[in-house]
Amino acid sequence: MSSLKWVLSFLLLIVDNGDDDRECDHDLHESDIDGAVVVDDDNDDDDDGDDDFDDMMLMMIMMVIMVMMMMMMMIMVMMMMMMMMIMVMIIIIMINYYYYFY
Image 1 (cartoon, one colour):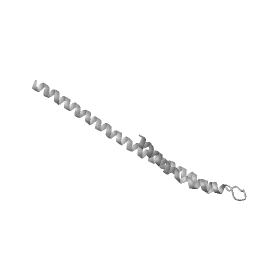
Image 2 (spheres, rainbow, N blue to C red; image 1 turned 30 degrees about the horizontal axis):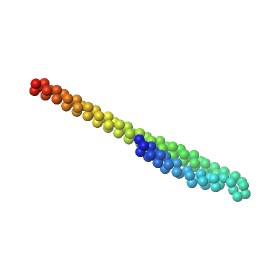
Image 3 (cartoon, rainbow, N blue to C red; image 1 turned 90 degrees about the vertical axis):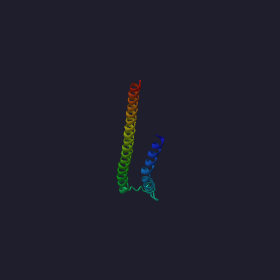
Image 4 (cartoon, rainbow, N blue to C red; image 1 turned 45 degrees about the horizontal axis):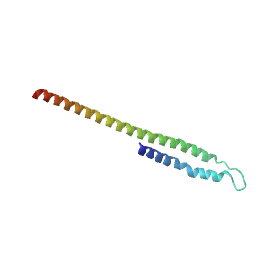
């Protein structure tokens, strides 16, 4: 479980990393040399679009991880059922042999 958490945090880091340079850029442009505040409208729009895209990517990554975990759980359950069936068959065969020999 810890490895999964590490992978998720790493993916979050990758997804969030795209906004850093733009935020720094915005801080630079916020106040000019003479003190006038410059507002970059197109930058904010880009930011919003990127945020939506990042959320979508994160959702897709989470969905893929969930599907993989579900598949693994299904395989584990199937293996457990197979083991139980084999054990039951062995027990039945042993009982039959016991009654056959004695």
